[in-house]
Image 1 (tube, rainbow, N blue to C red):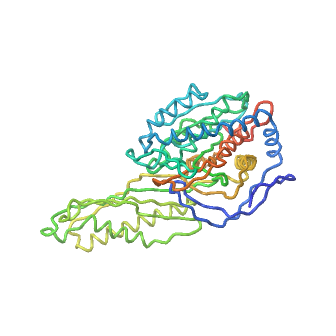
Image 2: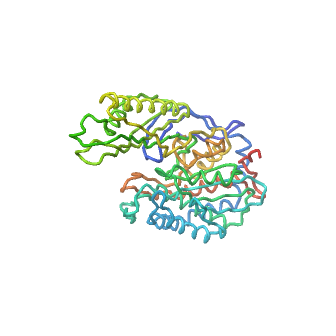
Length: 450
């Protein structure tokens, strides 16, 4: 069922079956959520003026006609490796594409982000729109794209090869059209969205560009959902240290691995609320020297997530207590023959947050999706680059790039290009609606107070 109906002064109210899912893990969990998207009459009027503009509509047709080349570019980008912290090769290529398509002053910043500013008339807000350069796959992964049964298969072909390509299409469309936007648009190919990248690229953007008024991330494929909420996460490497010794002659000495095992067992018994969804997992373990040694060192990596900041704080406190109890039990078990200590090392911190469905950025996205032929079926809570601006109170959403996909974060990741032109068409209308078009429509993204 669709969410968009226009009429009267309160245009849309609907109830939907929302899907709460993590883009980072590619997992989907259907959860019934009551939500509403209301399109104010003033927003609908401005958006209607925008879509009636002949140049805007001509650009929509040009996007559709150019989709085969957009797909070809998606393949080229996908085949350039970009593991976390090793995005440079793809970044350099992406910089060339930004410059060639109309942003000659684009550059790579100190964090590794590729940045290009499209200047409007100076009478509107500053909108940042981004797609992430990095993938989850190691450098040696075979990234060659294969076409089978109408689909394209390759690691990263959708996440986020699609988003990166849509961004380039927007740049080229703006540059080749005669349209002058009222606001400025900051285009970003950012690093650090996946894994231990910890959103470092977007954290740097909002550190260096404090006057951004709104943010849009393009991540993955499809055209039926908008991410308006941010799943927060805290990640730790938990390190256990002890004296170590020979397995036979030093028997009775405390063991770092035994302490770690006790701690993990304690953590596994914790219970968390299903609403707001709150989760934990011990993802990796390591330690020890040899089979005949009492371990002097052990460590595990822990991931904790929640859609609520308070629940995440409470979970972290309970985990810390569970770990300390495990250490104390190991020390006591061997009559304090040696001592195990533990250290929590923060390796990931993604804040939670949300953008109100009443904010114009959500309303315009819903209208743009409908105009492009999509059907809004889900408001999502997920972990994306939008976490950072949402936590800062800056209007932000994550949208998808059209087409269809599956197998994200696996070697068999695929992208189906049927109707995929609708993705960049939606993004085109969304961006123009937010920043405004000179002589046609006012910006619907509000400038933030200084």
